[in-house]
Amino acid sequence: MNEITTIKNAIEKLFKAESGYKISKAAKLPYQTVQDLRNGTTNLEDAKFKTIVKLYEYASTKDKD
Image 1 (tube, rainbow, N blue to C red):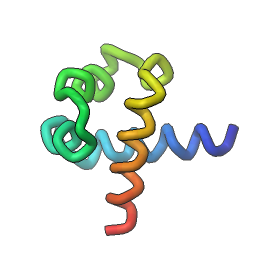
Image 2 (cartoon, one colour):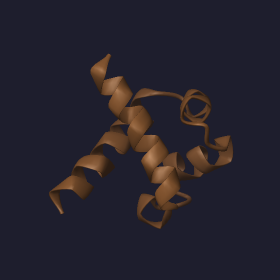
Image 3 (spheres, rainbow, N blue to C red):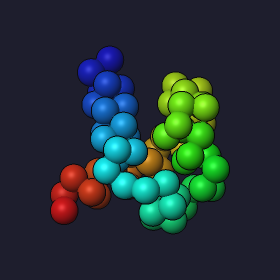
């Protein structure tokens, strides 16, 4: 369960640090999907696995910067 918490925290940190537009372009996700997750319209737990993977991969590259 610790890995899931790590992934969730990394994505939430990303949402606070960057704009929805920048995240959507860098992670190659629809802008509205990113906005719905950022604003709480859609819970992260309800997102598609593919979406979570893309967000986490982008968040991981941001941590290395």
